[in-house]
Length: 483
Image 1 (tube, rainbow, N blue to C red):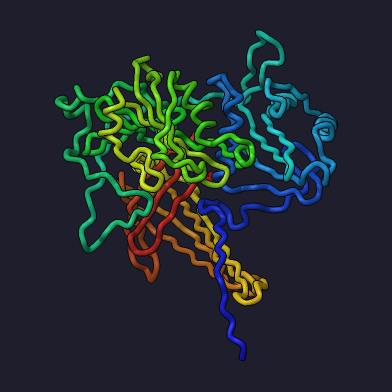
Image 2: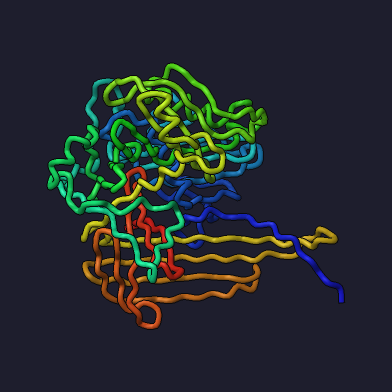
């Protein structure tokens, strides 16, 4: 009998997917009553929608205007589908929308009565992209006409003065296995800055973060770093050093493939330079001349956006599908950058990238009420090592949904594994009580009726939070609130 040896080719579908089927066929966009050409798809992946939302929000300069309910669609290329800008305009006008152009010919406002959407339409060689976001206001049709509010602005409570300390380290019998980044040391004191006057003199002078609907917007770390949530980033500060953890930005690989434009230069020139009013630009490539092997690091002199003080900046770009993450360090001079971040430009272990661990915030007792969901999938394709012939594929996918209401919870866990066409599926449901503290969540009646404690914290994203859970026994989740 012939022995088959197979070579493994793994194709990872983005991990933080919040539905079992995250890229689905789409024949129309119901909110616009717009029919789509055959072969169109809606992309519901979390990072895709976040990147699209960020792109749309770059067009909005009014702080009173917000974009929500973002939808992402990919259409076949125009030569194949026949769906171009003229067809789009015609169909939207048939549905009763008034189209208001912007300075970018790919972005426009759609208005019908008291409902408004901001759309992005780009016809590329391989596909057409269509992004849609609902606005809370109708844009001004003429200069000087006031903006009409669609939804009333609710009265938000002020952020609390108390900031909870980080959790103590787990004992050796109950280790934490947070895989994202090594957690900072536990705090030396459980007092908040307001309770410990002696620490007030060292607190960074930063703008007060806007209230986001969650209890805590600041974290104090015992190694001296203090994190706060700002409109466009998480700001981590220690003494005179600041690190800006930018929220996800859109990333389009076709902008850098064969164009002669390097992505690190694009994000420095279009995001760092205008924000920090940079005056110089340099690299730390260590003699590497192959562009694909050069670290995604840029540095130079600029200004503090709050104080105008002259600062030395270092930016590191990390990329995941359709999304870019910027980490920007700001120090008083170049020597301080080298001392505080000696591996800032390291291609594999940059200590700027490691600063993402300070995007970590406590959980209030009422922060979890609602539905939180996560999911992900991985496909492995197999090929015969002798003939190269395709030999099938195996898939593993899973999703988890948690429902929190007061002191009770329920969760549903679904999954499927096996060869395509012969999948094995499972579903497990738990119902019990929940006890929520700043950094842990205890859930009763889990597997075999046991009570489990999860390490828990929030990660800030543009306009919201992700909920991280890890029980140290194989259950690890990164969830987004869906309602």
